[in-house]
Length: 41
Image (tube, rainbow, N blue to C red; front, side):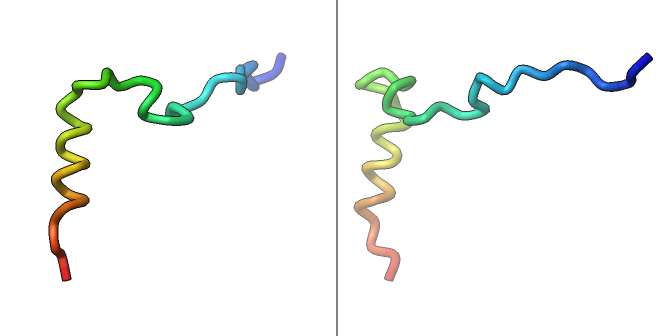
């Protein structure tokens, strides 16, 4: 008897693109836009 378990590697841990999963008016999109506009120099 083997101690190994079968594994399915066909799925992804993270989405290929977050744009595919987030709605167009999601708050996370606004946060990204604001952070990109910050002057961090």
